[in-house]
Length: 157
View 1 (tube, rainbow, N blue to C red):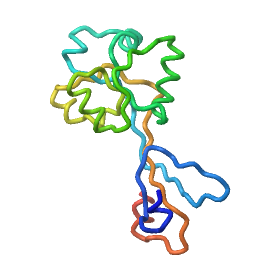
View 2 (view 1 turned 120 degrees about the vertical axis):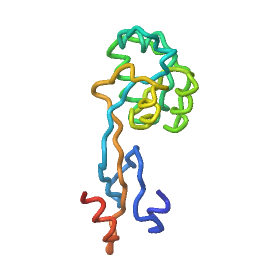
View 3 (view 1 turned 30 degrees about the vertical axis):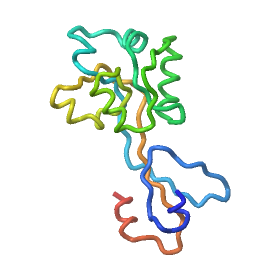
View 4 (view 1 turned 180 degrees about the vertical axis):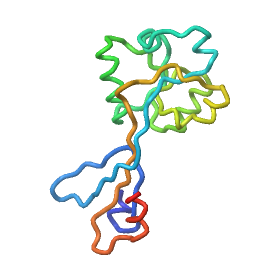
């Protein structure tokens, strides 16, 4: 964000909206939204499907850290379900969540697109879609007198 503030960058791609106030120069563009699922290895999930409540309350979970909107939504979900999750790891990076679920450290709360290759190959399985929870991807720019015309073209799509 410092690079954006210093005009060294034209855009920052993120899944966390920056704080805004009256003095802020940030323009936040929503570029995509992905559903969130509970994903694990076939060995961990077994051949029989279990209800979401059982999966969340009995299986070790690989979760995003508490600072993320995704984790806030997940925490609200388990609270509504009156479930106490078993937390195997809290991770601040989707690539690390991907590695941990592939290594069978637990079931992951992750957008399926992050592990699409593993899902297609069958090394990971989508146990359940977490309705009402999604990951939003943002492009953050800054107000500029002379904006980059290429960036304006990309963001308009």
